[in-house]
Structures are given as structure tokens and as C-alpha cells.
Length: 103
Image (cartoon, rainbow, N blue to C red):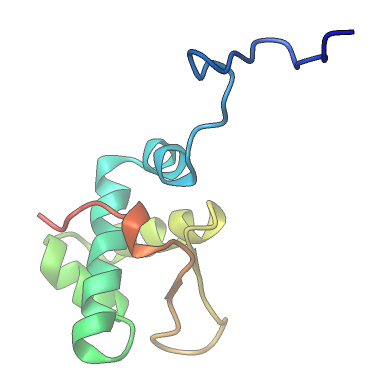
């Protein structure tokens, strides 16, 4: 008796396969969000601590409310985590391979 396969799966074409996490993640954030994530990664790597919102404000040339809203969005979408009441507590929840290059 032939084996059963899930609908839409074909070994020959690879159809029905789940896309890689990196492909899903890259599609899940906007180009601007990706730049903030890349900045957080490189800033942390170079300085040994997470950036403050003021650091991101200076780098991206945007207002304090814009940076704060972006940080909240990244946290809500589970790309970063923060500890409430603790400065410079941003921590990336993505692997480097899931981030774009910083422009």
C-alpha cells in the first residue's frame, strides 16, 4: 500500500516545504525595522552594551518619540526584549543571519 503524504508536498519540487526561519523573519520586518535591528546588533557588538534610545535618535536622525515608538514596535513583534526600568537593556531575539546589513 502506498504511503500517505500531506497535501501539497512533493519531494521532487520541494513544494509545500516550510520556508527557513531567516526567510520568514526577513519578510516579517520592514526595511526600516531591519535597519534598527542591525544597528542594535552592531552597536552592542562594538560597545559591549545595548544602545540607548538617544544613540538611535542621533544615528537615524529622528525624533525621540519616533525612536521610542520603533523600540516598542520591535518589542511587541518579539524582535527584541527589554527589562522595564533598566537603561540599555535591549536584547536582540534574532540571530545575526536573520538581520540585514546596516546601511
